[in-house]
View 1: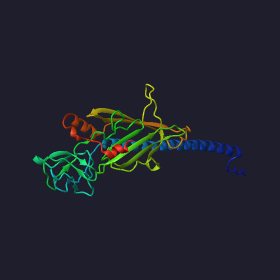
View 2: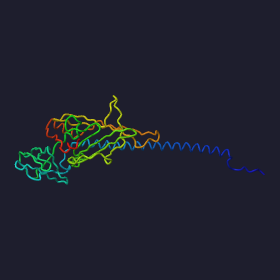
View 3: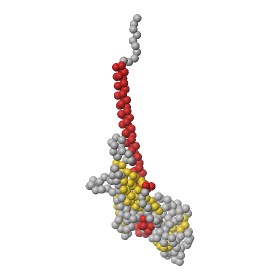
View 4: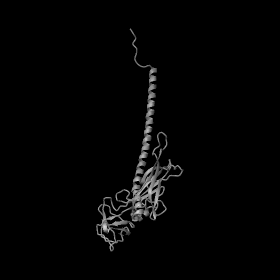
Length: 316
């Protein structure tokens, strides 16, 4: 009789197999850990890029829209609610839309069409606006506020009104394109890695008569703002920079440069450090201001609408 050979592994073979298995498992776990860290890095930077891109897109849109003058929504027709003339200079407007047209002292209006058309400057006060008319205009005559605000992006100081600077961008007009004119103020507070700064956006009606409120947490756009890296010459780079041109007795901003440096909300899992990123918009033109600058400089200075007194009160 022959002896039957028993099946199975010896202790040495089992130990070798376990060692190989543990080695493979260690390699797999190391790869998975690295993959998770890489995914965390990507997610962290993606969140940062998304937030700063959304903010810069908003800045581009609002700077481009700054200076737009509106008496009502884009589809509304504005007309005289009562006849006006030499003996009845009071101005009352009617609208085909839901917005109630508002006027301010100094605003330039174009009344009527054809041979009856004339341009007047609003006088009186905001409650009882009036004008000096050379012609008589019937009820229902169309009314237009042509042109744009030359100071739609409030210029840096030099000539009044002024107020925008390296850390404050101030603009006004029909910013949202809905017929409501508003005043918008961006405040860029730069910080450090350990104490990052904040970018605020503060919006209010252009004709607000109450005191401008302070910035609060509801106005935060970015809460991880850092100081910008210096330029190649070693000079500090501001959040906002402006190109200005003379317009009448004042100036207008024809280009805005925006530079923001932000860091990730969380530390990178691989380096243990916050990751910074700088986003620069070097040529953002307020198209309404640029258009009225060309028109007022070459054709008709009345197309550069004067700054409303209520906006002047909000600027400081």
